[in-house]
Length: 233
Image 1 (spheres, one colour):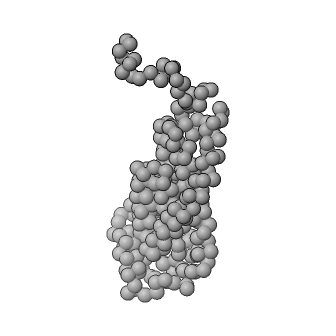
Image 2 (cartoon, one colour):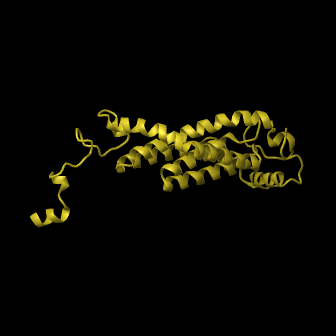
Image 3 (cartoon, one colour):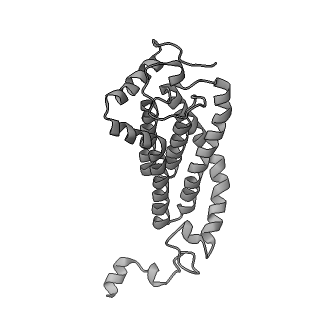
């Protein structure tokens, strides 16, 4: 199973040449930008997106804060698990990089001597994007969009076939969704314990009141209906 696409008549190879051919017509500076974006830039943006989502979740607080933070923790963990699952898959398929079997490709980055199927970058990015979607749909849609862009960049750079990228998307999504119930069940109690901590509870919720755990006591000023407060004034 050394290769999944062995001839130029294969649609996988045709699409590879079509997308990678854009790099030949693009300015040199644009190719350098795509090289950075496809190799490291989008991964960095994805990490920042996860942190931004966490900041919004903890600031909003509420009863669902712990479960949302647990889901966010699962996103990078799932990405790591998916990449580990990919190790035996790559060893079994043993598909060479596209530039090994096909001439005329514009390869934007060197040093890629490992196997091609499935794409680690695509697996990692989509796992984090879908993990984000489980925690927060708005941020998750952005994360999935970044993953799709990342997959395009890998083909543009000449280091992966389109099916490598699609396989990575499928693997990352499957790991997140299949293991999410178990991961959430294990992580949520831990996050709730952190939430109750007086020292590190801010990691989960920013609206916790000292000593009261954020709960409103009956009869307190916070328990008074706003309309009644206006009448009293």
